[in-house]
Image (cartoon, rainbow, N blue to C red):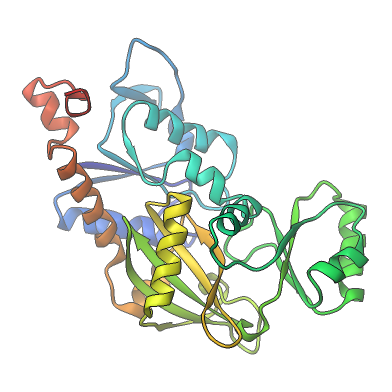
Length: 324
């Protein structure tokens, strides 16, 4: 079985998700799975009816893999990486997660629209519109509130504004410098300040979980921002909301972040289709990279258990299983 991890930074660096990319290579060797980490910049996208069994990498035709895991960090959020995922899907490759899922989930407002429509608990959320009507914000969301960039990740572009005056100052700054910046305003869940839960879902199963706690009374509980991580044994309610979230968003592999609610229970903070798991493996002791690769092997077995390379060696058309 051959798996491509699409990742746009030097995997030997300290860049976001580089550690996780190395973990896939390491576990792939142990499991006799051919894992390759490929930079999206190496691709050229040629749409043709004539050749459906390869793509262009570094200018050369390369046979398609069995699975692709787009592992885009915040530097890979443009059109081109998403077009690569779409192209591979159209050529019949199993892509975890698919391009439509990636596009939906990275739009935080769209994500919350889907969750609210599906009856999944989520904080009240509003899209910014400049000039901002502060009275409307105060009457619908209230203060303090959370301000987020629409496509941010890793806690970047997330602010807690405690008062009307602090909010007004930030909005005036944004309005003067970048009024086209897409922001959302979200109700602040005070009981969960500085702590949240990360439940890691793989192929319809919660495989690991942790609690993250911000240091020194901080607001953001991202591991990449210095939060401490602790093992968390999720209860039935936490598992249910994480799995329902992954299901309605059609996520194959994802990190579902939950906030604690006043009086008990949980609400969705956000979902992630490129979740880091360095802190999660540390906190839970679960081999997350292995869990992901095992899920790909199960999917291959469901589709007939024969890899693309084996079909090629046997002279079997690559789409034989789907056509018969």
